[in-house]
Image (tube, rainbow, N blue to C red; front, side):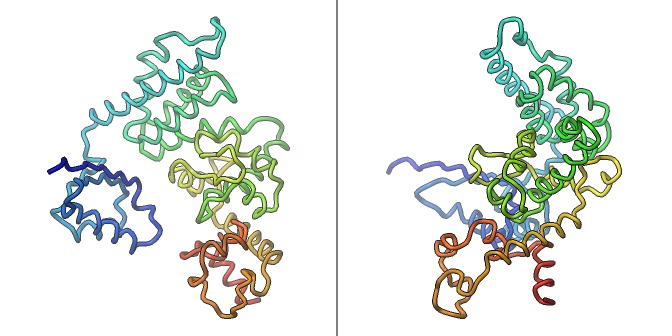
Length: 342
């Protein structure tokens, strides 16, 4: 008898699955992994403890081991975050030194034990802080790694309280550096940021730069300009045809937090942003909708009976986002109300 294959399946952020039924189905299927004979399957699942997740796992009690993040001893979290930071910052240092003149290179021990200890204390227990900070330090569009690190450490006093304060120190270094120039320039930046980034964090599905520009009725170069300094918090692909995604949902939570309304100029008014997106959707549909838009020649065909390939070939991504979402967000509800009353 041959050796049994071992497979480890990692599912990150299961709570972000859109359909509750899909969550239950995934958990149920994972619970049957022991019945497989040809492979030995192990699954590692991370999730927030949302109700569908708790219900799903309660139905398979005894078939899994759980670990609550907040119950992990602090020294273990500190060790893991320190290991990650040491690895990533050493890589950033080495890559920077390979392309720098001798007098500009970082010392071999950079960033040093004191800075490393400060970063670890700022991060614990939020791993997203460590990941975001490393992307920020790596971004040489503003300064060298040492300069970027110094910017991060300026926010050290803001991480001494709650995890909300730690999110402040995670994202404020990235956002505060945008607010430079004259008052007129800042107002223009804030308007563009709220239009472009506000839409990205609130849209139900990610869109490409090209589709965002079409949906929002703004030039592509403005979308690109607003996204260029945000590579540490947004996954901005090289191609304008590929979707722009958040690295972590906490970025959206930070931007729309009502408590930030009077404390940060780049705060996103969720209701106003949904209204702006709704208006853009109406304008976009007005220019694209027509009878038998998919050329089916079969009036009354249910949407779910139309092959995805046919829809994709007849509708651009930004229009598909509006028309085929299975679970409409707030701006789609507003759009439905508008169309019903029209």
